[in-house]
Amino acid sequence: MPRLDNPRTKILQTAQQMAQNRGFGGFSFRDIAADIGIKSASIHYHFPTKDHLIIEISKTYREDFFATLGSKTKEIDDPLQRIMTLVAMFRHVLTQDHRMCLCGMLAADIELLSLEARAEIKLFFDASVNWLAQQWAAHGSDEAHNKAMDTFVRLEGGMLISRISASTEPFDVIERAIAAG
Amino acid sequence: MPRLDNPRTKILQTAQQMAQNRGFGGFSFRDIAADIGIKSASIHYHFPTKDHLIIEISKTYREDFFATLGSKTKEIDDPLQRIMTLVAMFRHVLTQDHRMCLCGMLAADIELLSLEARAEIKLFFDASVNWLAQQWAAHGSDEAHNKAMDTFVRLEGGMLISRISASTEPFDVIERAIAAG
DNA sequence: GTCTATAATTTGATAGAC
DNA sequence: GTCTATCAAATTATAGAC
Image (cartoon, rainbow over all chains, first blue to last red):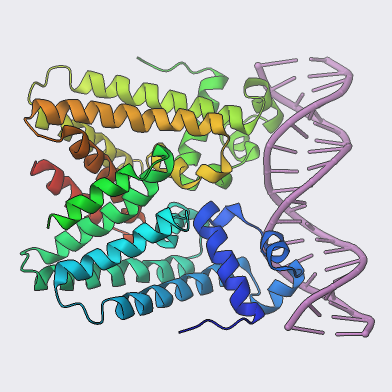
């Protein structure tokens, strides 16, 4: 599913990365424009307001994430191994991209966002917990929903706390805890 | 340990609350000033820059938190009960104050902060994990350090995710998981 | 210690030419 | 679709009166 190289897509990609690194208030239209070599006024043609932009970023992030997750787990049957594939995706964002999960980042910034933006971000949370609950249920867990919630909290918290600890140790610890079932 | 009612303290209290709700970039000197009925220029007399302010906020937050924790656990011997006293303090911030932990909030905003500010915030993380590790060790856990790290990640993640889920359910779930030992 | 006034910069957003 | 030019507002921070 290769993303097109049109201006709209380049804006979304750059803005998404900046949002994951610095949060909603931590980047400007001019920052995005300078990074991709256009002027900030051009961004407003594609996204009239910053609120529209953050909603589209969140939607793209969620769609891309679950498309990739579906692709990576397509031929994996073991539920725990499927879960650890999702964990590996979070780990990649943290250790290779050196970014936070967009969902966790915008959860911190939630008071700065419109109700529409909050609702869109909540869809990532809902979809993640539902997906995890299905895997834990297939794995034979009683209380699969609670297990899914705990797993998602550990992932988001592990990414967040790794930022201040200046190491990946917090994420390493919760990854082993999740893998232990 | 009653806090004094001087201007400096009122600035710190108000700024700390705003930082917990909206993050480092989400409040201004004018916001603080308006809230306590002074002018923004007066704040610069007490704290020359926003970086100085956030460092002092973080230091005060950490000192107050561990002073309160020490007081609340003074006559509690059972290590697990001592841990759940800390958990209850986090729960109170989330459900009564309707705020994030300052440490978790500034972890999200870390790229906006000076190295000095990051170092001060990391002290809260270090102190929390060390305190938790002592309790888990006294409780008889092998791998007390890992258990402490996992507990702290769950607490910060639970607060963060409860913000988007628009309920306390994520925190409820991790609280039960922690209590289960 | 707090104020008024203001500097210098950045912000989201718009108008209109091309 | 992208640009130049600009606006109105907000930001951190400083100078100097009181």
